[in-house]
Length: 323
Image (cartoon, rainbow, N blue to C red):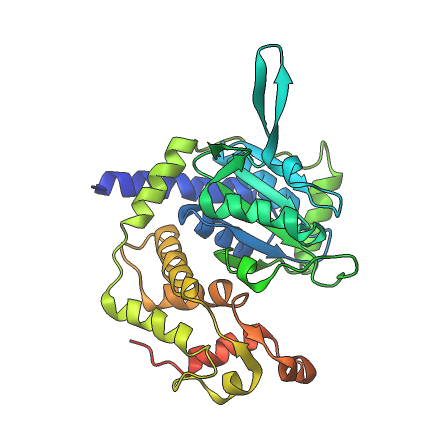
Protein backbone atom coordinates (compact mmCIF):
# COMPACT_ATOMS: atom_id res chain seq x y z
CA UNK A 1 0.00 0.00 0.00
CA UNK A 2 1.39 3.39 -1.05
CA UNK A 3 1.33 6.00 1.71
CA UNK A 4 1.12 9.79 1.47
CA UNK A 5 4.72 9.95 2.61
CA UNK A 6 5.78 7.70 -0.26
CA UNK A 7 3.99 10.01 -2.68
CA UNK A 8 5.57 13.17 -1.29
CA UNK A 9 9.09 11.69 -1.25
CA UNK A 10 8.83 10.33 -4.79
CA UNK A 11 7.43 13.57 -6.15
CA UNK A 12 10.14 15.67 -4.48
CA UNK A 13 12.83 13.37 -5.85
CA UNK A 14 11.56 13.76 -9.39
CA UNK A 15 11.20 17.52 -8.99
CA UNK A 16 14.89 17.68 -8.13
CA UNK A 17 15.65 15.33 -11.02
CA UNK A 18 13.98 17.67 -13.51
CA UNK A 19 15.94 20.60 -12.13
CA UNK A 20 19.23 18.77 -12.58
CA UNK A 21 18.40 17.76 -16.14
CA UNK A 22 17.36 21.34 -16.98
CA UNK A 23 20.79 22.45 -15.79
CA UNK A 24 22.30 20.44 -18.64
CA UNK A 25 19.67 20.30 -21.38
CA UNK A 26 18.47 23.59 -22.88
CA UNK A 27 14.83 23.41 -23.92
CA UNK A 28 13.41 20.03 -25.00
CA UNK A 29 11.11 20.06 -21.96
CA UNK A 30 8.53 17.94 -23.76
CA UNK A 31 11.03 15.24 -24.73
CA UNK A 32 12.36 15.11 -21.16
CA UNK A 33 8.80 14.91 -19.82
CA UNK A 34 7.91 12.03 -22.13
CA UNK A 35 11.10 10.17 -21.22
CA UNK A 36 10.13 10.46 -17.54
CA UNK A 37 6.62 9.20 -18.28
CA UNK A 38 8.12 6.12 -19.92
CA UNK A 39 10.51 5.52 -17.03
CA UNK A 40 7.68 5.78 -14.49
CA UNK A 41 5.52 3.45 -16.60
CA UNK A 42 8.32 0.91 -17.13
CA UNK A 43 8.20 1.60 -20.88
CA UNK A 44 10.39 2.79 -23.73
CA UNK A 45 10.59 5.87 -25.96
CA UNK A 46 11.31 6.46 -29.64
CA UNK A 47 13.08 9.83 -30.04
CA UNK A 48 12.87 11.31 -33.53
CA UNK A 49 14.90 14.31 -34.63
CA UNK A 50 17.68 15.42 -36.94
CA UNK A 51 21.30 15.01 -35.80
CA UNK A 52 22.86 17.49 -33.40
CA UNK A 53 19.83 18.30 -31.27
CA UNK A 54 21.20 16.77 -28.07
CA UNK A 55 19.32 13.47 -28.01
CA UNK A 56 22.36 11.56 -26.77
CA UNK A 57 23.17 14.20 -24.16
CA UNK A 58 19.57 14.13 -22.96
CA UNK A 59 19.69 10.39 -22.34
CA UNK A 60 23.13 10.54 -20.70
CA UNK A 61 22.02 13.37 -18.40
CA UNK A 62 18.86 11.47 -17.47
CA UNK A 63 20.77 8.30 -16.61
CA UNK A 64 23.42 10.18 -14.62
CA UNK A 65 20.89 12.20 -12.61
CA UNK A 66 18.93 9.02 -11.88
CA UNK A 67 22.04 7.32 -10.54
CA UNK A 68 21.49 4.42 -12.96
CA UNK A 69 23.84 2.53 -15.23
CA UNK A 70 23.92 3.71 -18.84
CA UNK A 71 25.03 2.24 -22.14
CA UNK A 72 24.96 3.49 -25.71
CA UNK A 73 24.58 1.23 -28.72
CA UNK A 74 25.43 2.77 -32.08
CA UNK A 75 23.33 0.87 -34.60
CA UNK A 76 24.99 0.08 -37.93
CA UNK A 77 24.18 -2.43 -40.71
CA UNK A 78 26.95 -4.79 -39.54
CA UNK A 79 25.80 -4.86 -35.89
CA UNK A 80 24.85 -8.39 -34.79
CA UNK A 81 22.45 -9.53 -32.03
CA UNK A 82 25.39 -10.81 -29.96
CA UNK A 83 26.89 -7.30 -30.04
CA UNK A 84 23.79 -6.13 -28.14
CA UNK A 85 22.83 -9.06 -25.95
CA UNK A 86 26.24 -10.54 -25.16
CA UNK A 87 27.68 -13.99 -25.71
CA UNK A 88 29.14 -17.03 -23.98
CA UNK A 89 32.94 -16.99 -23.83
CA UNK A 90 35.32 -19.76 -22.84
CA UNK A 91 37.46 -19.31 -19.75
CA UNK A 92 39.65 -21.68 -17.72
CA UNK A 93 36.73 -23.37 -15.96
CA UNK A 94 34.35 -23.52 -18.93
CA UNK A 95 31.95 -21.14 -20.64
CA UNK A 96 30.66 -18.03 -18.92
CA UNK A 97 28.24 -15.36 -20.03
CA UNK A 98 29.66 -11.97 -21.01
CA UNK A 99 26.76 -9.45 -20.89
CA UNK A 100 26.28 -7.03 -23.76
CA UNK A 101 25.44 -3.31 -23.55
CA UNK A 102 21.70 -4.01 -23.24
CA UNK A 103 22.36 -5.02 -19.63
CA UNK A 104 22.08 -1.48 -18.24
CA UNK A 105 19.29 0.44 -16.56
CA UNK A 106 19.12 3.10 -19.31
CA UNK A 107 20.01 2.08 -22.87
CA UNK A 108 20.41 4.53 -25.75
CA UNK A 109 19.77 2.78 -29.07
CA UNK A 110 21.26 5.37 -31.41
CA UNK A 111 19.89 5.40 -34.99
CA UNK A 112 17.99 2.16 -34.38
CA UNK A 113 16.73 2.12 -37.99
CA UNK A 114 20.26 1.60 -39.34
CA UNK A 115 20.56 -1.98 -38.06
CA UNK A 116 19.18 -5.02 -39.85
CA UNK A 117 15.79 -6.45 -38.81
CA UNK A 118 17.50 -9.38 -37.08
CA UNK A 119 19.41 -7.06 -34.76
CA UNK A 120 16.42 -4.79 -34.23
CA UNK A 121 14.39 -7.81 -33.18
CA UNK A 122 17.00 -8.80 -30.60
CA UNK A 123 16.68 -5.41 -28.93
CA UNK A 124 12.90 -5.30 -29.15
CA UNK A 125 12.58 -8.77 -27.61
CA UNK A 126 14.65 -7.59 -24.66
CA UNK A 127 12.45 -4.49 -24.37
CA UNK A 128 9.25 -6.53 -24.34
CA UNK A 129 10.31 -9.43 -22.12
CA UNK A 130 12.81 -7.74 -19.80
CA UNK A 131 15.24 -10.57 -20.40
CA UNK A 132 17.68 -11.89 -22.97
CA UNK A 133 18.09 -15.50 -24.06
CA UNK A 134 21.59 -16.58 -25.06
CA UNK A 135 21.74 -20.18 -26.24
CA UNK A 136 19.59 -22.11 -23.75
CA UNK A 137 19.99 -19.70 -20.84
CA UNK A 138 17.76 -16.74 -20.02
CA UNK A 139 19.25 -13.72 -18.27
CA UNK A 140 17.07 -11.08 -16.59
CA UNK A 141 17.76 -7.45 -17.43
CA UNK A 142 18.32 -4.81 -14.73
CA UNK A 143 15.35 -3.29 -12.94
CA UNK A 144 14.46 -0.56 -13.75
CA UNK A 145 15.11 -0.90 -17.46
CA UNK A 146 14.23 1.59 -20.19
CA UNK A 147 15.32 2.00 -23.80
CA UNK A 148 15.44 5.35 -25.57
CA UNK A 149 15.88 4.76 -29.29
CA UNK A 150 16.64 7.52 -31.80
CA UNK A 151 16.03 7.80 -35.50
CA UNK A 152 16.65 10.50 -38.08
CA UNK A 153 13.43 11.40 -39.96
CA UNK A 154 15.10 13.01 -42.98
CA UNK A 155 17.81 10.52 -43.96
CA UNK A 156 16.37 7.17 -44.98
CA UNK A 157 19.06 5.94 -47.39
CA UNK A 158 20.64 2.73 -46.12
CA UNK A 159 18.15 2.32 -43.28
CA UNK A 160 15.82 -0.47 -42.19
CA UNK A 161 12.60 1.21 -41.00
CA UNK A 162 11.06 -0.47 -37.98
CA UNK A 163 7.97 -2.52 -38.90
CA UNK A 164 4.67 -1.27 -37.49
CA UNK A 165 4.46 -4.16 -35.00
CA UNK A 166 7.87 -3.27 -33.61
CA UNK A 167 7.22 0.48 -33.44
CA UNK A 168 4.12 -0.41 -31.41
CA UNK A 169 6.43 -1.77 -28.68
CA UNK A 170 7.55 1.76 -27.86
CA UNK A 171 5.21 3.23 -25.28
CA UNK A 172 5.71 6.80 -26.54
CA UNK A 173 7.22 8.70 -29.42
CA UNK A 174 8.83 12.08 -28.75
CA UNK A 175 9.75 14.54 -31.48
CA UNK A 176 12.93 16.45 -30.66
CA UNK A 177 12.57 19.85 -32.31
CA UNK A 178 15.09 22.50 -33.31
CA UNK A 179 15.84 25.10 -30.60
CA UNK A 180 14.68 28.69 -30.91
CA UNK A 181 17.14 31.60 -31.03
CA UNK A 182 17.34 32.09 -27.26
CA UNK A 183 17.85 28.38 -26.64
CA UNK A 184 20.49 28.20 -29.36
CA UNK A 185 22.43 31.07 -27.78
CA UNK A 186 22.32 29.33 -24.40
CA UNK A 187 23.48 26.04 -25.94
CA UNK A 188 26.49 27.78 -27.50
CA UNK A 189 27.31 29.58 -24.26
CA UNK A 190 27.20 26.43 -22.14
CA UNK A 191 29.35 24.47 -24.56
CA UNK A 192 32.02 27.12 -25.14
CA UNK A 193 32.54 28.68 -21.72
CA UNK A 194 34.81 27.18 -19.10
CA UNK A 195 34.93 23.39 -19.04
CA UNK A 196 31.76 23.07 -21.13
CA UNK A 197 28.81 20.85 -20.33
CA UNK A 198 29.01 18.82 -17.13
CA UNK A 199 26.64 15.96 -16.41
CA UNK A 200 24.52 16.33 -13.26
CA UNK A 201 25.30 14.60 -10.00
CA UNK A 202 22.99 11.66 -9.14
CA UNK A 203 19.89 12.58 -7.15
CA UNK A 204 18.08 9.22 -7.20
CA UNK A 205 18.91 5.52 -7.05
CA UNK A 206 17.46 2.38 -8.60
CA UNK A 207 15.47 1.76 -5.41
CA UNK A 208 14.04 5.29 -5.50
CA UNK A 209 12.99 4.85 -9.14
CA UNK A 210 11.28 1.55 -8.34
CA UNK A 211 9.40 3.19 -5.46
CA UNK A 212 8.27 6.02 -7.75
CA UNK A 213 7.09 3.47 -10.32
CA UNK A 214 5.04 1.75 -7.62
CA UNK A 215 3.53 5.09 -6.59
CA UNK A 216 2.49 5.95 -10.15
CA UNK A 217 1.02 2.48 -10.70
CA UNK A 218 -1.37 3.12 -7.80
CA UNK A 219 -2.74 6.38 -9.23
CA UNK A 220 -6.55 6.15 -9.50
CA UNK A 221 -8.20 6.55 -12.90
CA UNK A 222 -12.02 6.96 -12.90
CA UNK A 223 -13.92 4.67 -15.25
CA UNK A 224 -15.16 7.57 -17.46
CA UNK A 225 -11.52 8.39 -18.24
CA UNK A 226 -10.79 4.76 -19.11
CA UNK A 227 -13.75 4.86 -21.47
CA UNK A 228 -12.48 8.16 -22.89
CA UNK A 229 -9.07 6.63 -23.65
CA UNK A 230 -10.73 3.65 -25.34
CA UNK A 231 -12.96 5.97 -27.41
CA UNK A 232 -9.94 7.99 -28.56
CA UNK A 233 -8.22 4.86 -29.84
CA UNK A 234 -11.37 3.59 -31.57
CA UNK A 235 -11.76 6.96 -33.31
CA UNK A 236 -8.41 6.36 -35.08
CA UNK A 237 -9.83 3.33 -36.92
CA UNK A 238 -11.33 4.13 -40.33
CA UNK A 239 -13.99 1.43 -40.00
CA UNK A 240 -15.19 2.74 -36.62
CA UNK A 241 -18.58 4.53 -36.59
CA UNK A 242 -17.02 7.27 -34.43
CA UNK A 243 -14.12 7.95 -36.81
CA UNK A 244 -14.13 11.44 -38.38
CA UNK A 245 -14.04 11.93 -42.14
CA UNK A 246 -10.28 12.64 -42.18
CA UNK A 247 -9.53 9.33 -40.46
CA UNK A 248 -11.77 7.38 -42.84
CA UNK A 249 -10.10 9.03 -45.82
CA UNK A 250 -6.45 8.98 -44.79
CA UNK A 251 -5.87 6.13 -42.28
CA UNK A 252 -5.04 2.59 -43.32
CA UNK A 253 -4.73 1.11 -39.82
CA UNK A 254 -5.67 2.70 -36.51
CA UNK A 255 -3.91 2.51 -33.17
CA UNK A 256 -3.60 -0.83 -31.39
CA UNK A 257 -4.92 -1.60 -27.89
CA UNK A 258 -1.46 -0.65 -26.61
CA UNK A 259 -2.45 2.90 -27.51
CA UNK A 260 -5.06 2.87 -24.75
CA UNK A 261 -2.49 1.57 -22.29
CA UNK A 262 -0.03 4.27 -23.32
CA UNK A 263 -2.67 6.98 -22.90
CA UNK A 264 -3.46 5.94 -19.34
CA UNK A 265 0.15 5.30 -18.32
CA UNK A 266 1.28 8.61 -19.80
CA UNK A 267 -1.58 10.40 -18.04
CA UNK A 268 -0.57 8.82 -14.74
CA UNK A 269 3.03 9.94 -15.17
CA UNK A 270 1.98 13.47 -16.09
CA UNK A 271 -0.37 13.72 -13.11
CA UNK A 272 2.37 12.53 -10.77
CA UNK A 273 4.94 15.00 -12.10
CA UNK A 274 2.39 17.83 -11.96
CA UNK A 275 1.74 17.23 -8.27
CA UNK A 276 -1.80 15.93 -8.72
CA UNK A 277 -3.34 13.12 -6.67
CA UNK A 278 -5.38 11.64 -9.52
CA UNK A 279 -5.58 11.57 -13.31
CA UNK A 280 -7.65 14.20 -15.15
CA UNK A 281 -8.90 14.70 -18.70
CA UNK A 282 -6.06 17.15 -19.40
CA UNK A 283 -3.50 14.47 -18.56
CA UNK A 284 -4.94 12.10 -21.15
CA UNK A 285 -5.07 14.84 -23.76
CA UNK A 286 -1.42 15.75 -23.09
CA UNK A 287 -0.42 12.11 -23.64
CA UNK A 288 -2.47 11.82 -26.83
CA UNK A 289 0.16 12.52 -29.50
CA UNK A 290 3.11 10.79 -27.80
CA UNK A 291 0.95 7.70 -27.23
CA UNK A 292 -0.77 7.41 -30.62
CA UNK A 293 1.18 9.24 -33.35
CA UNK A 294 3.46 6.27 -34.11
CA UNK A 295 0.60 3.77 -33.93
CA UNK A 296 -1.47 5.23 -36.77
CA UNK A 297 -0.60 4.03 -40.28
CA UNK A 298 -1.60 6.63 -42.92
CA UNK A 299 -2.49 5.37 -46.39
CA UNK A 300 -1.05 6.39 -49.76
CA UNK A 301 -3.64 9.17 -50.12
CA UNK A 302 -2.36 10.81 -46.92
CA UNK A 303 1.18 10.74 -48.29
CA UNK A 304 0.02 12.28 -51.56
CA UNK A 305 -1.95 15.04 -49.80
CA UNK A 306 0.75 15.74 -47.20
CA UNK A 307 -1.39 14.71 -44.22
CA UNK A 308 0.74 13.67 -41.23
CA UNK A 309 -0.15 11.13 -38.54
CA UNK A 310 -0.18 13.85 -35.89
CA UNK A 311 -2.94 15.72 -37.74
CA UNK A 312 -5.02 12.56 -37.86
CA UNK A 313 -4.60 12.04 -34.11
CA UNK A 314 -5.89 15.57 -33.56
CA UNK A 315 -8.87 14.94 -35.84
CA UNK A 316 -9.74 11.76 -33.95
CA UNK A 317 -9.53 13.63 -30.63
CA UNK A 318 -11.90 16.33 -31.86
CA UNK A 319 -14.46 13.67 -32.79
CA UNK A 320 -14.60 12.24 -29.25
CA UNK A 321 -16.66 13.91 -26.57
CA UNK A 322 -14.84 14.78 -23.37
CA UNK A 323 -16.18 13.08 -20.21
